[in-house]
Image (cartoon, rainbow over all chains, first blue to last red; front, side):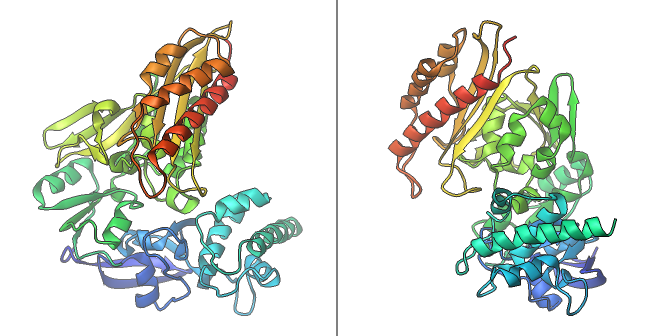
Length: 167
Length: 288
């Protein structure tokens, strides 16, 4: 341990290990954006209300403005940049959001997607109500939620069908 | 909207955490961070040192022993929500937790953090009130137990000493077959409730209420036990008239006006939540 004001953190971000020495007051969202250049994670309200900065930590959705980067030491973080399986191939949720016009300005989209990834990983065939409750902590101010809900329901079907096919 | 500069400490044991809290000037304890982190970002809290309890493994976990549900203070709210043993023994907890914030906040937020933050509208303090929870704490003077009634001193204020941390909450279990309900009204899902009601009860073979506990929150500086209503309900056969009569005891509440709702509205809403929670709990209670 060095000074109580700086720390070296080692973690895995989108499958790649990384290490940085940072100021301990750096929250995870700023760490991702400024230290790693992963600007896909958006910072909206910065006090845990809007959901735009949602990322996955060890597979669970969390608000990255309410977690210090030092607390991510030793953890696996997945951001919007880590959802697509390979360059040029969209995650089923991304494809469905595109198809259903589930985004307009795109500011809330990374948080919507990471939140919904956790839902679809844990609930096989969610109802529209379950989708709405899942994204109740993510605020969209332009597109509205209809297309996002439709996209989540379709992506759930696509994921279930691909799991069925790979059996 | 960035946290102020602070020294960061991540003890691995309760005794190390308590030692740090007692020795560092102007130190704050960080649990799940779903209340303290916004306060840091907005700089309404300016600690010189932050003591992060997330590495203290002994403060996390759920167990059932001697009629008590024991929940470590650092247990995540999501872990209560998905716990089979909590669902089997204490179903009011998951029912209420589904209304605490959102998935993203429950994944980080802790039971102890919410109890110590003691927001007057929060669900967990209301549960602690209705269940007569006991909070176990640690300080340089050792461990002690505080009943929730004594723990919840006032508006967002606990009776913890400055060098003391809550380590676990003990919830006395109700018998199998008890009725339960947690109802709240919030403008949007996951918002702090304008008023909420928690009810636990048992009934006998004739449908008479043999034991009852009612707590409300959002209507005062801390959760309120409705003792007058409880006394009026005990021994009675449940029904719409009885529950409507019991809800009238909300007239004695003294909520404050605020930007979310005027006091009169909160008071009326509390009565409605209480009546509906009584009906729901009564319907769920086994006649035994």
